Image 1 (spheres, rainbow, N blue to C red):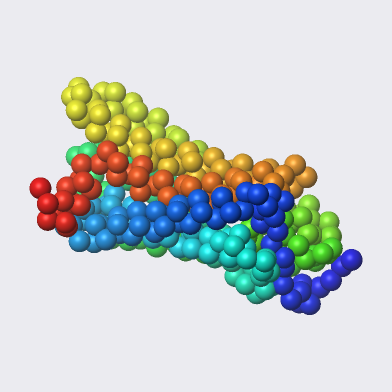
Image 2 (cartoon, rainbow, N blue to C red):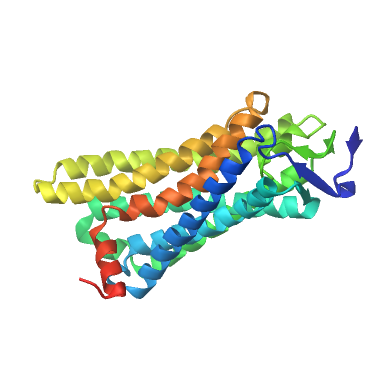
Length: 307
């Protein structure tokens, strides 16, 4: 059965209805993870604003990352919790397209922001004497603006391509939110040309930044190994290791989901992969960046007026 996109009233999100015994457990776990995500990322933003010691390029970009993670999870998790808790699994067509657009914009922005943060770490470790000259406030603001604009352009491109494709069959999405690979499953026309265009866009937004980040860390590793001070090495590896771990978690799951052909995409595996990069990774980011970070711990003490 085929229908025009303009005639679609809404979709049914199946979510995790294939595993009804898992739904109560997932509801509790995701509620806890979401609360921790809100708390952790809000704390980083508040500390970065309140403590002058954290008014540095690294924490400027980390503040943007935390804000992104807050928006990123909020674009999907409330809908998931509604689906897990009650019988209503529907979402309007307009709501679905809006969710797809917002999610893609935020995810793409995060891809580019992680690349900018890698450049910041490269400048700090490999060009320490010129760091303040390179990473001046105006450049930081321009780089942040470029990441947001880049994410917006990528989302506009992919969402427009998706909306131009005719959809057919029952308006059922085997997912817990409106994600691109699941939408593509509903396309009833030949999508090879559209998928090829999307693949190019995704390569630009995922593969190229990954390659550049890995290349920068090769130079960072060489520079750190030349540092004679053991404490200096530990500090550099600690800061850069945190960013590399965040990059691995985010890019790894995103590449798995978005760069495999539609024919080999497993909706069930995709759902659990999406849980990871929409809920687990944003929750872990504040912990990864702050757990062994003396500056943040000092900022917490100052704000709470302890120690």
